[in-house]
Length: 416
Image (cartoon, rainbow, N blue to C red; front, side, top):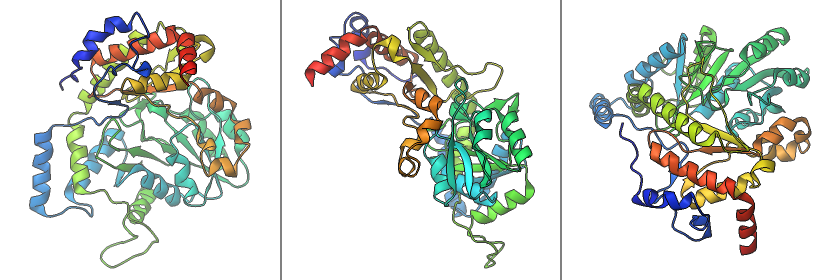
């Protein structure tokens, strides 16, 4: 796949950028990039192969309702995840909601606050209370010791999040679930194509949920899936995503509509054919970012475990403002001015969003690591739309901003 073409402006201004802050767009100069570089810009597959599948779908005149393309996509995902069942859905939030209901979760369910808000919303939407638990300061995923402290008589389950494709402490969470009779569901939205101890993510807990949203490593435009080895659970999930129909005109279960369309599945199948190319591109981008940023004081690029298979979907760094002398939010503002649309994934934590901050106004007292971590997170553009020379330009801006942090902060303050 061809590398993203950088603008001529990038090449002309990089040398000057390395020397002075006067050329920064935040101070009125033109941005480094003419087009916005987004986190999660879609990875695009082979168009000819995709349109061929589209034409075949139109020729069959079977557009949804468990058509052959969806069934093939489910078979391919199940095989890659090493599970017996994959139930494709219209999106991952619906997949989470259906999995939660099919597992019989009720009362309280323990979740991390350091996640996309859909993790919490999928519970609250069904009047199940998300109980926010702190994370391990090294892995940024649920801290099993803290999970134990959050269990009450109303607790029915745990939802672990494989954040940025980095697996939860699965063994410990599984043991907690077993010893306390709790259902274990994993939000694996970031983790398709990743492993834990060499085992594909998708095979753990009672079920796992993948996202195939347009911004994800592998996309179906919009989509998701529940994967499981539990035959009874899989049958229930299939009923729940199709109005509860068991054959024509025979509804046996209260349910909703979560079906994936044939066109979305066609995008998924075609993307699967380029998946390893996507992975390699992400990996090369990650290595370039790591090389460019590793020597900057106060900045830490979150590592991937080299012993595991990773999709390298996210490039995330944390920054220590006491060392950089520049706030994270000010750095984001500088990058946005250059059309580098870096994100604060995930900040604030879910507990500081509505309705949770009103429901649980003091939750932050039990989440010190989450509160600390979210203050310094920055996620950078990557994927097939980003080239190595783009990354160099992005990192030059970051290096310049952090080297002159105090001066930049003072100048911005004088302009307000």
